[in-house]
Length: 422
Ligand code: UD1
Image 1 (spheres, helix red, strand yellow):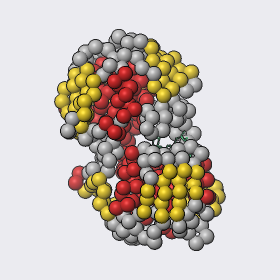
Image 2 (cartoon, rainbow, N blue to C red):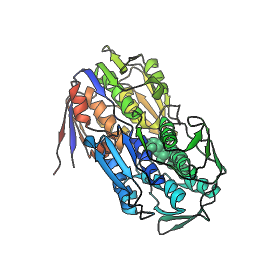
Image 3 (spheres, rainbow, N blue to C red):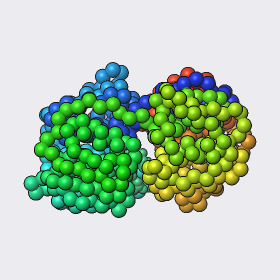
């Protein structure tokens, strides 16, 4: 398995182009199942999760081709021949459950493996199941698979989510475009990836209002047609690279970045004394060498501080002046990077969902283990400022969510290389 070797102490200067959002692409790709006409996505990130979704869609009979070096995905589901999402693919990536809504809507039935837990938490599917039941689906669990059927198709209705789940909102939104009548999603998630999905679905002929708010109204239509849609900028990759110069020192402009995607995150950077400037090309972050100030952070659904930036923020707070308290409210087990950061000299106490970070002036490079996607990159960020070498092992998680991380950071002056595994 590959590892990444970072030698700390090099200030960063230059620009980093931010890719299309992994989490948007992973819900836009299954949207192809809703139509028998082609759907083309541009600005797709080149990631292993995208390959997993490609394999899943192909296993259902869809045609999926990566063009322009993987930046364009051309898809067509006119030859759909299966409604079964197999455990072998679903277990690799939880977002595989996003085929359930489109399959149910188009075919009236689907068999989708339960994804199982993952390192960061149990991650059940109850909100998705309750939502489809509210739309008339009958769902049984057999042999680890959800067997979903409908009598004469999905029906619109009021779907009230007990929690604003991103995946459940996306699954229901896709399904409701072809359901009979009007569906109202109450307590809907408001993430930019949902607005991006709704924008794409509208381009395919769907009738949707209210995306980006907690109440989305969808008027079902008989069929959707083809479309071409650009994937929204990855706000998590953006936030990650915005933290790099804060930790390593220097100035980096993140091309394609927009304040509206990362407002709550930028508020915290500003509170920590960091200057963020919106330019006509993106977001520029400058750090003049002083340590950032400690800040308290609580993760929340959008527009709150994103859980997917919590590990990276912790890496920064390890070097801050003072004590910060990080509260993780979305996932029950998302501090696995803390023990690894402690191996590098960080001072962190974890109690349940709360981590107290006592900032230190210096950390030291060490061999560390990547436990999940965002944890991996937080260790790379810490390595940028730690003295000596940090070797981040088991980086396959990283490749699920960050394209060419060593090239992007290397181009702005970081000393970073990939060591190929056996
Ligand atoms: C998506 C993102 C992920 C991000 C998360 C929260 C994708 C592909 N992934 O994941 O990167 O960290 O949003 O912003 O977009 N829950 C239940 N029952 C359910 C569904 C969810 O209890 O049926 C719980 C989860 O266990 C978790 C919380 O709700 O504790 C949030 O999950 P959710 O918003 O659904 O996240 P995902 O869509 O899986």
